[in-house]
Length: 302
Image (cartoon, rainbow, N blue to C red; front, side, top):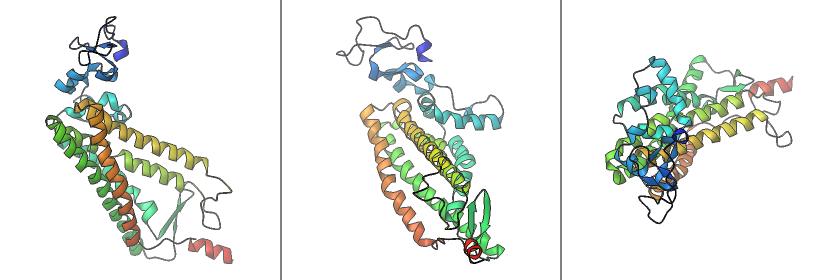
């Protein structure tokens, strides 16, 4: 780590090699150049010049691409790298889209398929970690309903993925052509954070009982603690996804701070515009949900 390196501090009175009007705070252990706060990346102990020259020297490969340990162990350790985005970002500068695509199919795709079942099915209700059937549908009707929910969620996730990947990868390719694969690798390796956040919220909602009026909770009762906890966890996962984008554009692609804000900001704004519209379109394709489950209405009559 950078704070453990005895040679990381710049000599007293030294100035930054890139900005002569700024006092140097660090000395790059690789090239020996003095660097100011903006020109040194403490998590990987490298100056900006070294990062642009060869980012991969500052970070080992992602566990999924490494040769040590078991395949299952490498797979699960790769999830953990999402939670230290600045240290792992240089690894995305390594070549090869295929490993990232394989990881996406093994991690994000199953989560995407599962995340559509609870909110988008119309023949099933989920509460108390139990599954209730709405009305008297046949087994075939339920199966078709679940398949439709999965297909709709797959379409929604495809829109979210493309609205993030296409502009981010295009901008990185324009401003850092030698690192153009890094953007695609990052998005594929980190996309699971979105559907996983959705699953956490749905599992929290599934844990709640359905009261007689069919509402999970009322304003007078307040928001259940498990819902608040899941909302915090979902927000944190989205923040790590954002940090991964910024860190990769800076450390793997060598972009400046303003340029990294641009290449990250454009896809985020596009997502804010496109994703809600796709959700609205999906609502129009699906039948409206029942406000109160039929089994609760039957119970109330008796």
